[in-house]
Image (cartoon, helix red, strand yellow):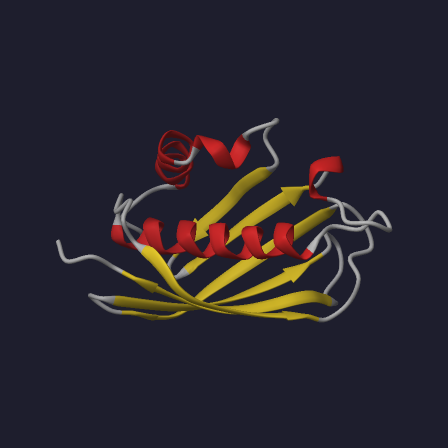
Amino acid sequence: MTAMTLTDTRDFLDREFPQMQAGGRAFHLEAVGPLTARMRLDGDDRFLRPGGTLSGPAMMALADYALYAAILAQIGPVALAVTTSLTFNFLRKPAGLVLVADVALLKLGRRLAVGEVRITAPGSDDLVAQANGTYSIPPR
């Protein structure tokens, strides 16, 4: 059971962080569940690096945003939960412009949440990137 449904979490993100969709919707929250979330990035020119592949900053944004969504779905609409750490491993060049981030929360406490994000291309199990992140949750 989650504190917020998929629709509630999407609506909260759209309301509190409209800048994430500036230039057109690119980040799509596809699922939330107990200690999990899935988000898709539909990349376009604004996310490309020289050579025509998705940039590292775009992948890092996907990981951080997906982790934030997973935490919010569990704890409810806490806008001031903030990233305190994000460790990122780039493993292979993305094959296309669409990536999927699967989040698994490893710890969800009163003050800290820790999660892992695995980024793949749709239809592939090969990791493009992997991240570990920690969020600070403000006192209620």
